[in-house]
Length: 336
Image 1 (cartoon, helix red, strand yellow):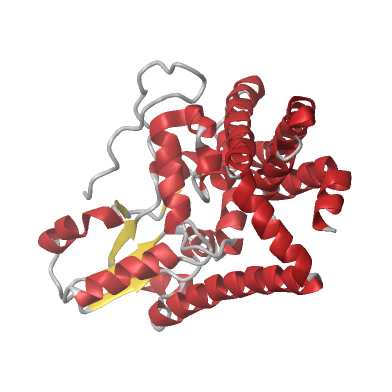
Image 2 (spheres, one colour):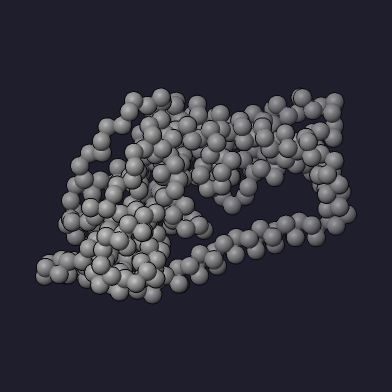
């Protein structure tokens, strides 16, 4: 039964699954590619004539979905990344790592992004937001989509006997096998959501809001304010709270050695969930700092309440890129 279903609707399923995955829906397309590759290998007479069209369908669907995210980044800029950060089941530090990875390797990262979980969904709108030419984007993204889809189909061909055995067992179980897969996907998504909520619960006990911070600054009792956004985020939103100091959560030892534990510290990042700021505040508190708080809502909350902003100086000119975005990022800003 399952064999017949995939044989009849396989190409359409591959296209729909690849499109959904590229749009960010929680429906991984790699298993579908592997499955179709295995079924094609079980019918060697049609192997060549079947795999090539399916490969093209997978690439085409991927490029359609990726182009939508690219133009979302181009039109809405950093707001698109903040939306993805808010909806993600992962810590927003994953978004920050992607931004830094993209800043180092530029658009070339798209050639391998689909092989690294989470990297593709952030790097594609980031490419649009950072001004990459569409033809440059689509060329690199097509290479990445070809590698990704070709690898999935190739794995299916190689593992065809084992997959055929599993399909046979699933067919004997009937609808119970589909129910088991659905329950597994639901349980996995639920586990990721619960883990994120638990993390937020652990680090969300203490916050400072924009009004309180503004009042402290106004009466001359300003705390030390850390801006821990990535270089790429600062380029998209080149403003800071006046007097804020650039810091990197990867350099906690330097921060601990530079500042006194009794100093009041406020930390803000770019994600609406401010998880990175809260995580860094928690680590500093564990290191003995007595009064360190993340800014509730981050820089957006400060902007919305009408707090003053200071423009950033333009970033230093980087070496000439190989392509539009192929500029290696300089070192992260140090604490001042």
